[in-house]
Length: 274
Ligand SMILES: [Zn+2]
Image 1 (cartoon, rainbow, N blue to C red):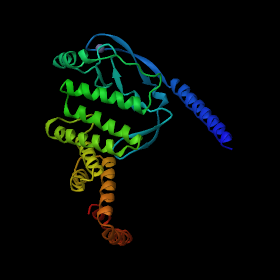
Image 2: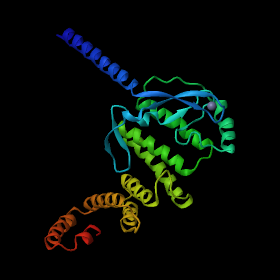
Image 3: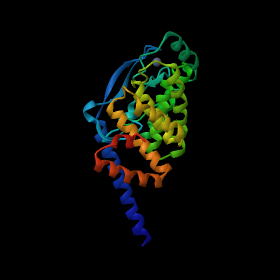
């Protein structure tokens, strides 16, 4: 009996391996090699990139994390120069200043040991590469917002693994750096206008259970005169979730009130803004 079970397990394992292999083969067709020149050592290398036509969005989380089907573009977000160790998120990779080049040469290159990566990356590869880029951002004294975007993406990778401890740890680092950016950098920050950024600060605080701070930021977004409708709606819906969490009984009453208001066709907006 047990032999049969072992046999079944082996067959199952083989099937699993085949499925994994066919997934890898399928993903290989969705990526291509992009030629990149390293601004530190001038080495030319091939960075793996996901074909734009391969992007399939499944869902967006409230903190802008996008869940993809077929292949995950976040896994290919960091470029690594294997000659000198310079590693950054691809959008920042070419944007480096003279003093930062010197810092990478001094602090990263002497310690660098070249690495090999598989043809197709997974979440573990992505975490390793995002950690490499984070070390580089620190070494080159990058902007707080650049470090924050890197740690936010690391948090998202741990979310894929359902590793709440690491996710929360990197969200905390993200919030600290984004708080600093808010007071010290000019908008747009990481491509976000002020209201989108304030919304994200609200969302990060909400995730970290700093509800007072979260409500403050969502309140700013909701009452902001220039807030785009989409962001305003997102802030309203997140604020509503917090209010329901904090005071479920009060919510029941307000739902009833809302019904009355709706039937009277007045006061609907003021109810949303409570
Ligand atoms: Zn290099």
